[in-house]
Image (cartoon, rainbow, N blue to C red):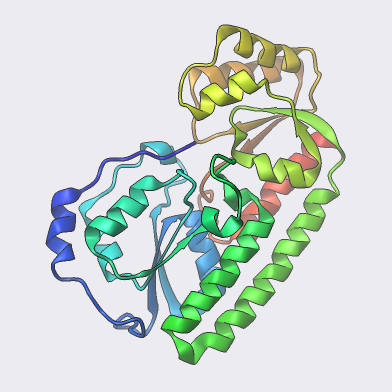
Length: 290
């Protein structure tokens, strides 16, 4: 699902006039300043950059729906001062690219969806695609190395170690038994594919959710029937976007004793590590399916 948000245009105009800086500059504390659209990509940057980077994520509230985020005046300042910005792309966080452009930022940019190689129109939730996450980590190492050559080897070593941890995640997910699931929205699409789980959510339901419209009555009924008749092993629920529709499905799952596996679009409270987060979600899937 896309995040479409308003811009803090007045604040951006004020900071844009004063921004600048060369590619080899770092923050006053010696750290490279990086801004990410969400704390998911911020956590990937932190894993690669380590103590040599200062990462700020615009969307980092685990209790909020990312799609209702409203930018703040300080966001413009952060972007104007950044040396590297990382965002999801694919139409998911268009607000971020608009903010970056309006701020006049000269920062290097990493578009995760573009890095993924997926065609336009494919599922945009690429932070659940482990191959893409590894590619982004490698790109982060490259860009940080260009900005801060003195730590280039460290960034590359960190990215390599991170890749190894991602490979372990993929192996763990692939060990999950096959089965059919339905999803309140296709956020974890790539993770389900890796796990060998088949998403049998009626297309009309998924398409309506992606377009942020109410699903057709027949599509909602068909989805509910899959749960009530226990034709699926789990309901995969995005717990950051509860609506009357998603509540109807989770209620149906409760009545039918079908496990509900919660997934999210940002890291949970108290979690700052991407691998830790994904491990918990994979464990949740494995527990529901087994």
